[in-house]
Image (tube, rainbow, N blue to C red):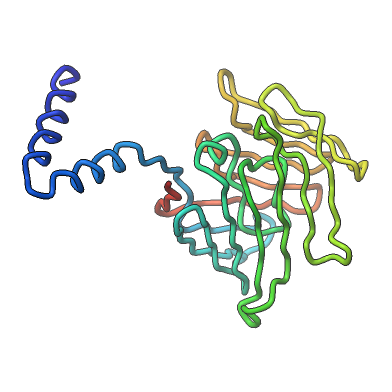
Length: 221
């Protein structure tokens, strides 16, 4: 089957090139072949393992490089710089209390609005990266003046482990042969991820959350 695939693709290419709209068809095919996407959770359910009936469900959708999740009375919007950069990091859970700025890569910004007041940003951060796509700074755009935090101490996979706030150094742990973290540890807080980089658990000494998924959404370019 592997030897037939290129010839079948070529036959399809030649077939559409023979029509009167061959130019447009060729451009469309090339665009399809060059299309890059990243898979993201479409439905996320967070459970507090220590509290019964505590499920919170987030329903998510995408538009271009934008990923939007709605749940728990809020809407969380992330916009990525590119698929290539987004593929370097994990996918943070939508509950912002467990959001790891230095774990996700290629984010242009993330903001939150309350569904009760959707025209006003409740949280708004922009992110900057260096030429190696490593997190260089995060800016809280809602503080006055905007508060800039500088990041550094990159590990071998390019993840920032320190910032200039002097907070506890983050440690990134990996499964053998991978460059996407399976766990991020910062002091007594830790978050784990599956092989796709989607969060599995987030915990500290007093709280433990589990995340489960349904469906796939894609950001593409």
